[in-house]
Image (cartoon, rainbow, N blue to C red; front, side, top):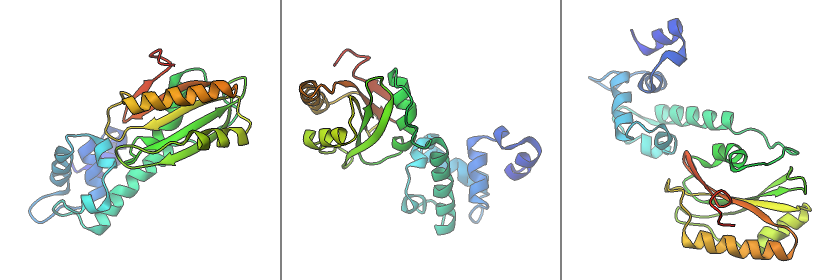
Length: 216
């Protein structure tokens, strides 16, 4: 039974990753059906849908049988999935642990190929006031100016901050520069009576919390 027929009879949740991808592909190349092509593509990405989701249209076009229309269709499906996960900004919610931060920021950062640095501005009750994008950079890092961080935080009258950034490499462990920056921002925050409560690094489906690891 072909994937599309199975989806109609059993529901899309019954399909495997290759079958779902085959439906997006539609039809295969000469001498190869869509399901075989989908399996070949997934094999290239070692079965990792996150790697597939990070692929550009140009990257997908390198596969035999994948032209502009099919590459765009696959990328569009991945983007819809990201947007579905990415909840609208919810203000007034209390941040109690690193998991609250991860669930809020992972959807927008999980597939980023460049680093982004955010600050979550909190009230004295640790409820969310604002999400502040501080900087964007390349694959190996982004420049963070403490003056920018705290000017943005002061503008929204934050009482405390949580720092968040991503590691496109997939390794959640903090670098020495991450540690230095966290110490510097914590020192400035202390002098302003605006403590840094945590610094969370998101790397794919993994994360690292400075607070949970007693590094603050």
